[in-house]
Amino acid sequence: MFEGRCYAESWPLRTTFVISRGARSEAQVVVVELSSEGISGVGECTPYPRYGESVESVLAEINSVLPALRQGMSREKLQDAMPAGAARNAVDCALEDWERKKTGQVMGGPTWLPTVQTLVIDEPEAMAQAACAARDAGVTVLKLKLDHTRVLERVAAVRAAAPECQLVIDANEAWAAQGLPALCESLAEQGVAMLEQPLPAGEDEFLCEFSHPLPICADESCHTRADLPRLKPLYDMVNIKLDKAGGICEALALADTARKQGFEVMLGCMLCTSRAIRAAWPLGEHARFVDLDGPTWLAKDVKPLRFADGRVYWT
Image (cartoon, rainbow, N blue to C red; front, side, top):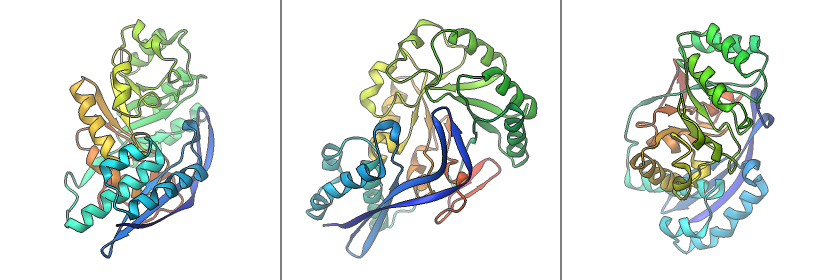
């Protein structure tokens, strides 16, 4: 049924993106194009080494299912044919894009979504300057990337620079259990609204041993619905990303199941182009926090969405 191809793209960043596990100067994505009946659907994913993915492995995964797609494999069967991850995401989103174009559906939901702006790890003064620039551009929620060093100093610098902004923190698994309760108390006292993945995935059982003074969100620990039972005693919120869930089908199901089980929902993204943000759009309306600023880090984007005033606008 579908003729398809996949290929890699590299998008230079406007500045280095620094988190606890390293620095990046480009976004490497994989694109899937599927065509049938004169209609083409496009999907994009970002292979992530943290999850054992590379551009080469993702391309190989996608190429392995192209023959089945030519024979008409359904989206339902795709979920079983490929594991959750970046490769399935690109294929699933290409099929979703194709179906939407075939039926003439207009993307429903809001015409814009709020989005946080990420501040990468830097000296406290530099992070404060970045916070001022974001605040002056209309951003109301700042997401601080932090490692295990100078945490309170960096948060204090950003808080002083942008006292009216809401702050969320992403530790990317870099912290330790020792001292975490007291650190959470200090962050709550500084008005931090949420803490994302402080402990390594699979080593986060300590989170059930103290009362959380601020919501703690699972990112690396949460990929699909299968993760939720283990996470329930540990986390208050889950960060849903299409690349982790393996596409919009599982991501929507994960969001629905998570809410029913009492989790709040955050919508996140990888470093990506606006193609990936469009695919994630249906998840944004009911998320407590929306983190879709990935394309703002690119020196150049493809068919760019408009980012302004702390919002991303559908175009």
